[in-house]
Amino acid sequence: METETTDLCELDFPPEIYGEKPPDVEETVQAVIERVFRDDDGIIRSGVYGKTMKPLRLEEVADRPYGIGCFSQNHAMPHELKPIYNNYENAGQASGKYIRALLNKHRVTGDSQSAELARRTFQALELLWNNAAEWIPGWCFRPDINPYGRGWIPKPFAGIRQVEGMTECSPDQYTDITLGLERFYREVAGPAEREIIEKMVCSFADWWFRHDYTTTYEGGCSWWKMRPDCIHVITFFLYLNALAQTFNPTEQYEQGFELWLNLLEGGYEAREHWGGPNAMGLTMQCLDRLMELRPEYKERCLDVFNAANDHLKKRVQADKDSIPGIRGLFQFKHFGAWYLCDAHRFLGDESALSLAEEFLAAYSKRVDFYHVSRGVPVGSLEPVIAGDDYRNMFVSEGHICWLGAYWYVKGVRDSTPSAK
Image 1 (tube, rainbow, N blue to C red):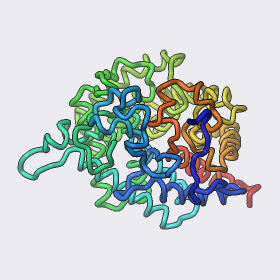
Image 2: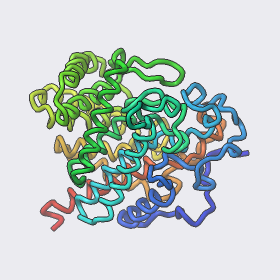
Image 3: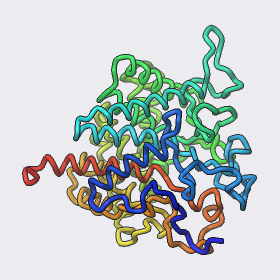
């Protein structure tokens, strides 16, 4: 029995050392995402079992095979999938982030491969969108597939072709997906792809409006309008309705926008209770797009953006000297680097860029990309984290954030006069 978390992998790939220099690390990170996390349908898995570098199997969850005690215990999903939920729980988020990371690379290199990998990821998200509410022409959406209808994107716990009975999701999944779709739309999509993305985004806005911005979440109903502390949710719904309005101007999208605009002030006043770095980063990314889509609100959005950036920097600075990351438990610095790049790009914050570079340098080995830091005593872990379903998961989002931040920083540094 493990006494502390260790690197369980005995395979030749991923390699123990990703590279001695950042360009070598980048090459390995890119290969790991494609070879380990990309599944046959093109979606990016959220995690794999570190021992096998394959999706976790039921027989590998010995301590809670029925899902009792897992984070997923009360998720609205097929019961038999609860012990292995970590394989795909954040597949939507990971895929949306990956599109943007690849387009950061494409912007610097101009290579067609990055654009095509982004396209494959977009096509996987389109497939998930279609499978989540299968349409029978001339009739209706098939309720046996999913009763929620067009625009619903569940967490695809068994992959994107098997979404029956999955009614669990949260706005952060939609946020990364929408940001990825819009970036693809603006930079590399062809006319037919743009038409699909317009339909997808509008269906998202329609779905949330029809359901009064509520979802089933962890065994209950989340009334997102009643959560001013979730500033990333408020800013996402502002961004979503503003984007849908550009694609198909309607009174409904304007009503949705006004609803969340009225809630923004309460969210700003609740800033002492805002969440962690991921929530702050998503807030900044949504506000970035919102200020372009609705420039008349730029001054107000900029106040919130600056507050989110300050909150983010406090969190990452607090963990700056701790290699394992936040609370000494989770790997975090790659996420910090990803979001600090947004602070630099929008605010010209040079300290954010330097800190992002420092964080990138902290990742060069396989052991750096487990979700739970290696070398942590298992006995010190909370039970929900110590279980076989969670403890040894090797995650995609850390790789993706590292990749996207690397190419952003490289693009900035290569374009400065001192670099020429």
